[in-house]
Length: 453
Image 1: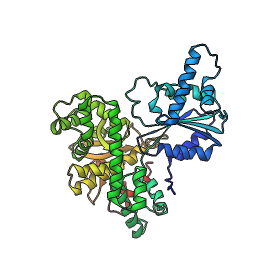
Image 2: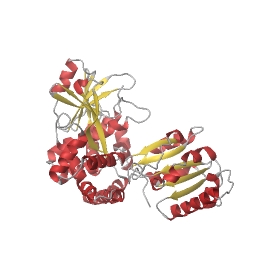
Image 3: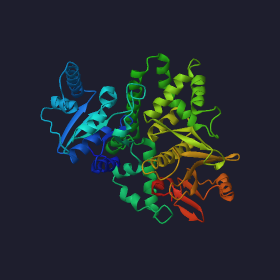
Image 4: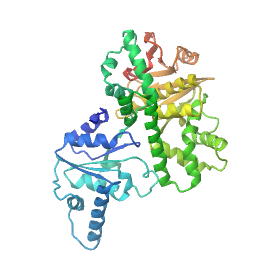
């Protein structure tokens, strides 16, 4: 029996369905994050009738044949009041157009022609439509049009720590956690161990399911490597030049090397320049700036990496985007940090910072809890603050220092003294938490319970 991983995106999809006059729903996200599974489960539980079309398999081939036939007939003079209805009726003769029917078109990135008709789906039928697929292909194909006015969008990511705890049957333990020191030692001990496992394997559903079955980290890593290889293989479909292929074989390692660097921003003017300098130094002097920029856009749009901004002198008006990068899955981050030979002690700190980045990024969804386009670090004099946050509603500011041990930060204290921030937030791997004036300390595994108010 296949295990079910409860996903928080399900509630977002339910809110979309309950909204009067909703548009077509686009379920986006990286490869292997569980889009197809959650969409089909949602359809089976929330509708009486489901039509599922996958543009990468036989159902998609048949659907596109009906589309091509109908298109040619209309060009030849066929009068058709509602081409979308006629198309689906030809594909599925028993199709009934009603609010109790949902039509799912998976792997939508395979057809610009179908994607560009989303407006007609939304406006000409009573049935609901859901399109889903990865970003692969769409970001480089100019034939894809922008249909924001006719799309509601939700994004599926890898499992968060909270979702991982739910899968492990340990969410009650998390709910009883007091991040300011009021919980029993046993609670912290168990959550600390679960956090260790999560940061080792990451949140890809197939990897989490493998751990639930075998409790073997090596077996989880084997599943993760299959996911990475799948991504690289699919990337080759869109890049003809062999040099690009060489870049993709090694770019994960290059990103990991950038993560290891501890400094205020980059030596170069941008992340792309920094990455290119590493690629050129380690692999090939013939790599062009355009190739590296294409690789970066690919990784970002495909949900493999994310960017943090930079705030100079803790001034929110002095903001620079894409000043630092992180992996969007901790399993990938952990593997490549080990792969490049990063010392074990350094890995713990980098993974902790990446974990907090992912938590902050999730708070930027709708409605946003914090400001800015992306999480950001800050500088103050010669020092650096891991993350600088402003609460959306209260406008209170927080300096976050991420530590895997028990260190403090002189820079954060200086920021408090100079009234550059309202609160200092220390996020640690080995603490029960506490509050002293405007200095807050919480365990890192409890950060999603913290509210920026």
